[in-house]
Image (cartoon, rainbow, N blue to C red):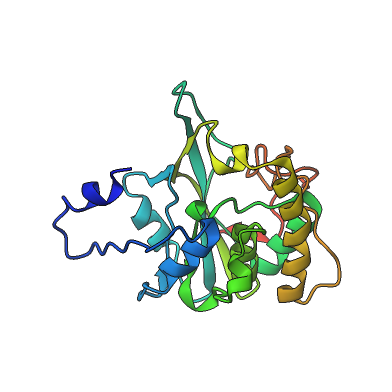
Length: 231
């Protein structure tokens, strides 16, 4: 698709380009990329997403020794209509206990979005191949496992942009695969996290609020911050 040719035009010692010998699959490719990373924090940028001006600095500024995940509300742009929207809303940076976040997710669905929305500390990422299986939602496992090991810093919109179009994998995957992932992901996550209950991911796209955070990704969340304090 011309990606490698485009990248070859850049002359920047900070940029290292690796090309897989074969198609590894969505999440398996993320795991492969982790093997090349050498820095203490990992920032994935998926195919349709991009850092907004100053975005990486905003993620980095939220880091401290107790934080294992930094998340930002994505600014979503429809690639076909140009419409700009947000699936979440947060008026100021906040810090949330990882365990409190996961407890909330059990009841209202996944809140941290895709790997593009997160920056994760490298030493808390599960690198077992089973955590990056195409048949699960590995983004949920990535964020959940990392969140159990520290605090989550929540940032307002402005750090990450997200493209939206009807050809994206989440919209074109078969209903059968989507159902398999919905069932398999919480079961595997509970194994890693040592939980006995199975969190429901089915409410992921329903509306709700965490303080002023989720606009359309959670349902039934109490109004006001839960375990959150201003950053």
